[in-house]
Image 1 (cartoon, rainbow, N blue to C red):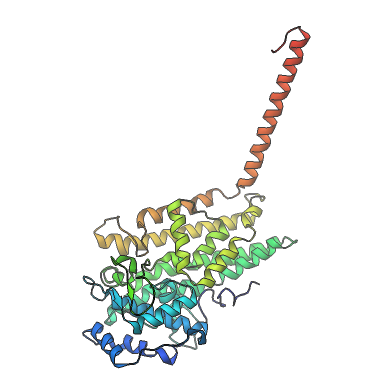
Image 2 (image 1 turned 120 degrees about the vertical axis):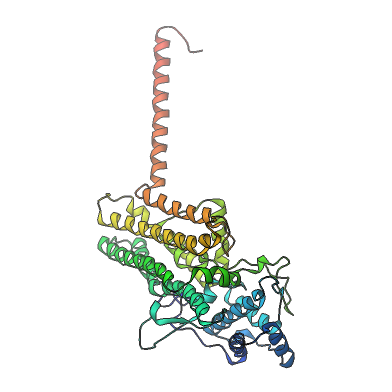
Length: 424
């Protein structure tokens, strides 16, 4: 078993078993969240509050990881609300009273100061009924940016879909680890590998089921016209975002993106789905910096472990493990196609069918997602083809041909000499 504490993993995967409460020094951030729904001039309220109250300076080393996550999550939401509240005239200076906890919590967690998947999905939920288990129908978002119940439902459901995928499907990490440990051992246990692949298959099916539930409560019009702007990053501001009284240059970071989830990259690594295109590889690599530091370290660690594909390539195509492995990749492809359908409905259709446009993370959506799907499909089609073995076989063929040519030339030379001729 890998060190779960080292990599920030719970029994539910990348989300904690329970989100921590905000330390008392920063309870005023909750007050800001509550007052924004009734305050007509939120910018003025925050600035006046800062003038009337002493600026909080606290050593962030005193806080536990869960408390840092809570501070980061709420300050992300407040920061983006403050900046993008006036869509036509976004703010380019963030008041110290919000900027200070935002910057310091992000630095301690090793994550970018911008609204991320971790901020709104991983660390921004609570159970509806403590007596019931974690599930999409038993969780709610702790903090939201939009006003009125209808808008809040869309915003919350948009976040909770990913929260549920992380929490209900997070055990996939442990089933992958089980298989890695077999591959790292001296004893190959086919039955054990099959059992864990079967568990992985069930989780991939659940991922698809959950993402398809987004249509239940997330209104496409509200998402596109009300929420989406708040998800933009500081890179959308011409001169970046200045953090008041924080000794850093104005920040320019990309907005919230599904590529900031850590669970899908782990699945790509495990099934050896290769996104080799320079633009896509670069963007996915960049998005790791928008994940919690511990989570991206686990991704790097899993990337160094033995490949199940090398073992699969030695099996017959009718082998149960081979078949199960291929089915899993087909489910990963289906999940990505479901994500593409969500983008079509919530973005392209809201643009009147215009397929052009970038995501809040900055990618060209149509080409990016189609290529991701194609890469997954290519992996599924190439299962059983061990590239290193193919190269090795080609090398043997090449050396054999050179040997044959040498024999032919040598034989011809001897024949000519016997006849009194010389090749020279």
